[in-house]
Length: 167
Image 1 (cartoon, rainbow, N blue to C red):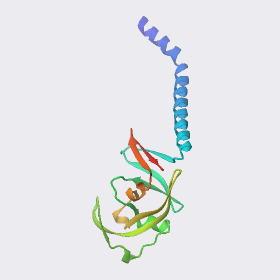
Image 2: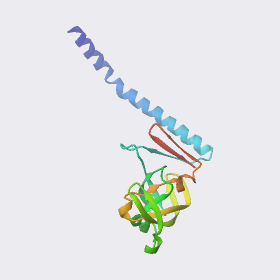
Image 3: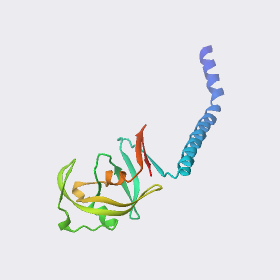
């Protein structure tokens, strides 16, 4: 009985301290992030961090020719790929005759059209003239940010569930 009472008193004594400790930890994390951000701005680097979603995928909000779209960052995709519906929104209008490039996807073989994305912005990172492919919507549900864009970066790193793009 006394042990229970001692544990109860100890918990009651620590209860006001726990929120202060959590706030202190958050402040230290913010200061570390700010120091990292300052270090990258001092070196002229632009960085953008993307946390993995529950499926372990990296999905980012990307501006394509000024229009924001969610894109799946896919280091296994050799090209940046847009569904035709997204391509049209961002000002890319392939003709039916343009879909002649044979493409192997996870869903099988299809035909794509070559395109160029004039401007791609993700966070503070700005890329220009990104070679892309346009596929029919039935072949691709979400745009892919592939290696034709990622190769224009200085580098990218993946660790601890975070993808860091560096320009």
